Image 1 (cartoon, rainbow over the protein chains, first blue to last red):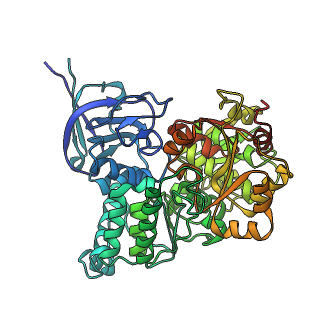
Image 2: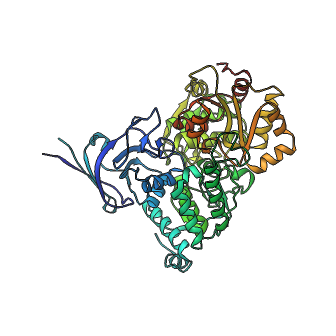
Length: 139
Length: 413
């Protein structure tokens, strides 16, 4: 039987989506941390180095510097290597701007803190318009 | 958001389809950040190089131009991904140049100034205290906010173009007084001696305070830093910490005192950067090999003063044959540097002065693979940070040490 956790926040951007959680304890930059041809994290010091973000519901602590992320998300989306949704501890404007252009689901400031609860592989439903994220634990 | 009549007209398509799309995009961003209104901007600055855009981004720009999008405020463009004079020598493909030409054509149709610079604040559109801007490239934003007291968020390419067309931007974040207040006091006990030391300070602080919504107020630094030093500090803070504003108490215009920087009271949080913080930042970048593959002065583009200093430090000596020495600047400063003889001096030593570009924008992953570049020595803390994501081994060192490495082919420490 799966256990369900509901997280609340202000309305996000993008469509309602569901998928598998990929949880990082690092920040994220779509330009400087990613190989954008493959959707694999390329920065050697990143805790997701070598892992694919494609179609995942990705949890990152912060959105990192680099204005180019706003273009990069759109590019990744069109070429089919984007995450399905991005959840941040706190995001910055660039990520939101990029998510708007790419029509990608993005939310931040979830309550309670998802990092104490969500693990890789958990099923996540992201509902930006409602300001709600629902996580079903695998076990 | 509360819209004015003219904004409602734009949203209804009365200003054309491009302006409607632009405002709609800005509105979604404004709603996310709970902005109450738009503010007029006096200029826009757009990051839109070929690597960042990809083909889909280029088509987005071309379409905006085709459906009648026109800039309504002065709009400058960030560096591009190829120096049209030097791309072949560096092993870049014609494809990159062709993409960049499409981007330039689209921007010219949109009515932007295709100046390809990330130091617009020094050379093209100097920011004024209190004015609202829609600028991209984090280094330009943090400089405008902190050093000039102008007001901008990080505006990514798509929304910076949108702001250029609509002439406005949602009033959230750094457009508002409350966001500009210092949230943390950083007492700097380290003593910077040259511009790259200021970049190292930015590296140290940015690693501690890594959040767009944080505003550090720096104290403990005596003296009056140069514009070059503030440029390095800002670019580095923005790169490592995703920061859009800092206060330097006694120097920057919104920080006559620590309390003033905090909006009436000193920030509750305080961190101390110890005396060896600068050295620690340098030492956090270790070479994998004694011989550097290349030495790069870039990010942000160099000013005339910085180009001259490198020419002086080279002092007629020849760069080691196994080391590539690169400088990047904008067209205006390269032209001046040429006229004043600095370019010839650097080229005689074996260095290259590229214009219109910044190193990490030159499709750096492909460039590195093609030229077998791995260990990159630089005095730019920002470049050292970014280039690690492109498969390089970055080594941050003071300018003079970088020059010695270029000439001797060895890293002295």
